[in-house]
Image (cartoon, rainbow, N blue to C red; front, side):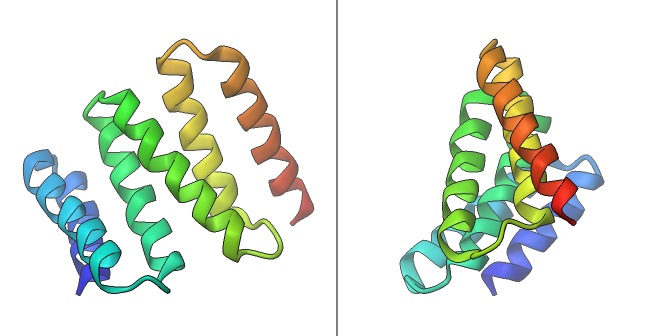
Length: 119
Protein backbone atom coordinates (compact mmCIF):
# COMPACT_ATOMS: atom_id res chain seq x y z
CA UNK A 1 0.00 0.00 0.00
CA UNK A 2 2.81 2.42 0.87
CA UNK A 3 4.50 1.83 -2.47
CA UNK A 4 1.24 2.68 -4.23
CA UNK A 5 0.88 5.86 -2.18
CA UNK A 6 4.39 6.91 -3.17
CA UNK A 7 3.68 6.21 -6.85
CA UNK A 8 0.40 8.09 -6.60
CA UNK A 9 2.35 10.99 -5.15
CA UNK A 10 4.63 11.01 -8.19
CA UNK A 11 1.62 11.11 -10.51
CA UNK A 12 0.06 13.94 -8.53
CA UNK A 13 3.36 15.81 -8.56
CA UNK A 14 3.56 15.44 -12.34
CA UNK A 15 0.04 16.84 -12.55
CA UNK A 16 1.09 19.84 -10.45
CA UNK A 17 -1.00 18.81 -7.45
CA UNK A 18 1.81 19.28 -4.95
CA UNK A 19 -0.31 19.40 -1.81
CA UNK A 20 -1.99 16.09 -2.61
CA UNK A 21 1.34 14.61 -3.67
CA UNK A 22 2.80 15.61 -0.32
CA UNK A 23 -0.02 13.91 1.57
CA UNK A 24 0.51 10.66 -0.33
CA UNK A 25 4.29 10.66 -0.09
CA UNK A 26 4.48 11.57 3.59
CA UNK A 27 1.90 8.87 4.36
CA UNK A 28 3.95 6.33 2.38
CA UNK A 29 7.14 7.09 4.30
CA UNK A 30 5.31 6.93 7.64
CA UNK A 31 3.64 3.62 6.76
CA UNK A 32 6.89 1.97 5.77
CA UNK A 33 8.76 3.24 8.82
CA UNK A 34 6.01 2.12 11.18
CA UNK A 35 5.23 -1.27 9.68
CA UNK A 36 8.25 -2.69 7.91
CA UNK A 37 11.67 -2.44 9.48
CA UNK A 38 13.08 -4.74 6.77
CA UNK A 39 11.82 -2.65 3.84
CA UNK A 40 14.96 -0.63 3.13
CA UNK A 41 14.42 -0.69 -0.64
CA UNK A 42 10.84 0.51 -0.39
CA UNK A 43 11.77 3.18 2.14
CA UNK A 44 14.65 4.42 0.01
CA UNK A 45 12.31 4.77 -2.98
CA UNK A 46 9.66 6.57 -0.93
CA UNK A 47 12.28 8.92 0.60
CA UNK A 48 13.73 9.62 -2.83
CA UNK A 49 10.28 10.44 -4.21
CA UNK A 50 9.59 12.71 -1.25
CA UNK A 51 12.94 14.42 -1.84
CA UNK A 52 12.03 15.07 -5.47
CA UNK A 53 8.76 16.62 -4.34
CA UNK A 54 10.59 18.81 -1.82
CA UNK A 55 12.89 20.02 -4.61
CA UNK A 56 9.86 20.93 -6.72
CA UNK A 57 8.38 22.73 -3.71
CA UNK A 58 11.69 24.60 -3.25
CA UNK A 59 12.00 23.21 0.27
CA UNK A 60 15.66 22.44 -0.15
CA UNK A 61 16.62 21.54 3.42
CA UNK A 62 13.77 19.03 3.60
CA UNK A 63 14.76 17.69 0.18
CA UNK A 64 18.31 17.29 1.49
CA UNK A 65 17.12 15.26 4.48
CA UNK A 66 14.88 12.96 2.43
CA UNK A 67 17.45 12.41 -0.32
CA UNK A 68 20.26 11.88 2.19
CA UNK A 69 18.11 9.21 3.86
CA UNK A 70 17.44 7.58 0.49
CA UNK A 71 21.15 7.53 -0.37
CA UNK A 72 22.14 6.13 3.03
CA UNK A 73 19.55 3.35 2.81
CA UNK A 74 20.52 2.42 -0.73
CA UNK A 75 24.20 2.29 0.22
CA UNK A 76 23.37 -0.18 3.01
CA UNK A 77 21.53 -2.75 0.91
CA UNK A 78 23.02 -2.32 -2.57
CA UNK A 79 26.30 -4.25 -2.81
CA UNK A 80 27.16 -2.53 -6.10
CA UNK A 81 26.10 1.06 -6.70
CA UNK A 82 23.61 1.29 -9.52
CA UNK A 83 21.78 3.88 -11.58
CA UNK A 84 19.16 4.52 -8.89
CA UNK A 85 21.89 5.54 -6.44
CA UNK A 86 23.44 7.78 -9.09
CA UNK A 87 20.10 9.49 -9.67
CA UNK A 88 19.58 10.02 -5.94
CA UNK A 89 23.08 11.47 -5.65
CA UNK A 90 22.40 13.85 -8.54
CA UNK A 91 19.14 14.98 -6.95
CA UNK A 92 20.90 15.47 -3.62
CA UNK A 93 23.53 17.54 -5.42
CA UNK A 94 20.77 19.84 -6.69
CA UNK A 95 19.47 20.29 -3.14
CA UNK A 96 22.99 21.10 -1.93
CA UNK A 97 23.53 23.61 -4.76
CA UNK A 98 20.30 25.36 -3.84
CA UNK A 99 21.58 25.60 -0.27
CA UNK A 100 24.86 27.06 -1.60
CA UNK A 101 26.85 23.99 -0.54
CA UNK A 102 28.74 23.97 -3.81
CA UNK A 103 31.67 21.76 -2.72
CA UNK A 104 29.30 19.06 -1.48
CA UNK A 105 27.27 19.31 -4.68
CA UNK A 106 30.37 18.92 -6.83
CA UNK A 107 31.51 15.89 -4.82
CA UNK A 108 28.07 14.26 -5.14
CA UNK A 109 27.93 14.92 -8.89
CA UNK A 110 31.40 13.44 -9.34
CA UNK A 111 30.36 10.33 -7.44
CA UNK A 112 27.17 10.01 -9.49
CA UNK A 113 29.18 10.28 -12.72
CA UNK A 114 31.59 7.58 -11.51
CA UNK A 115 28.69 5.25 -10.77
CA UNK A 116 27.16 5.90 -14.19
CA UNK A 117 30.48 5.19 -15.91
CA UNK A 118 30.60 1.69 -14.37
CA UNK A 119 27.53 0.68 -16.34
